[in-house]
Amino acid sequence: MNIKDFLNNLEKNKITRFFGVPDTLLYPLTSEVPKENLFIVPNEGNAVAMGFGFSISTGKLPVIFLQNSGIGNILDPLQSLVAPEVYNHPMLYIISWRGRPGTNDAPQHIRSGKDTEENLKLCKFDIYKRDYFESNTFDPIEEIIKKIRKDCRSAAILVDDLFFTEKSSPLMKNKDYSCILNKVSKYCDDEENIIITSTGMISREFSIYTTDEKKYTHLPMVGSLGETLSLASGIALGNKILRNRKKVIVIDGDGSLLMHLGALAIPDYYDLSLTYILLNNHRNLTVGGEHTLAKSMNFKKIAQYSGFGNTETYSIKEFLNLKKICESNSLKFIEIICSEESEDSILPRMTYGFENIKNKIAN
Image (tube, rainbow, N blue to C red):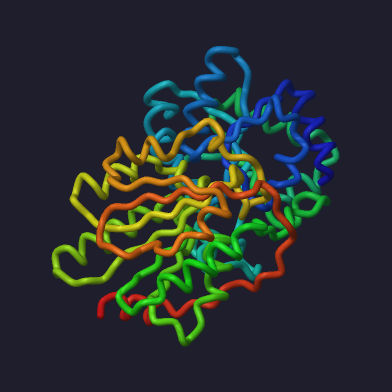
């Protein structure tokens, strides 16, 4: 379907506001919606709550957009806040269908892709796929909206890789990441170091420098955006209990950190040691480069108030001139302000040895 026709049909039905989290397959949508009508939020649960608030205050039906992996984040508000037993408020959801059966997608999307329809049925959604739009000559959007209002039941439009005639976003990488990740790989190359990288381009690019000769253990996040620091905190807790000397280094992005910002409070509260490196480029780079809310945040101060004893913000040049990065077992926060510029990436999809990684950390 042509994205302009799709948006025109929504507008004809008085639907013009969009709340959600970007995704590669939804790039034709988020790049075409006027910026004053597009509300990108840290996580999908935020989108449901904000969309609901907007809807009851204006009487207008919003669109909630997300990747299918984010269905887990919307379950709580779906089953409580807007559920029939509470405020009983259906809305229109546009959900990208990563890992659709029959497609070749990354490992983190395989299970989610298989379970997407079943998960939405459990949420009592009416589901509309590409064939519904291709086989009908009438305005399918109008029919969907009528049914939402008549049955008081939410609807989900599943957007697969063939739904829009326009291409999904190209794979992109930040122009500053290479020099940063290469430096971390060199300066933290010790067999006692465990380096955990955020899902997406940070993990893909860091894996290039993680050759067989490297001594550290690299644990790439596979999906689970926003959980990088929580995973690292669990490993740091294990290190503390076992009294081993392993150091935990985290490399995360601003979009990931914002998704579950409360995780910053975990390490100090439980007296854990780790080094957290934040690559802040104000962009959701892995999913089309849409902006995050990072420009309005002071991550260094938040980290300080969360108990990180050593907090620094560096420019690229300042970081590259550092002589030490992860030299001690302490709680350290390093923010690197990266360029917002990006370029098309030809980085290959990662290959994983999941059991091998787990065993290396256990040993």
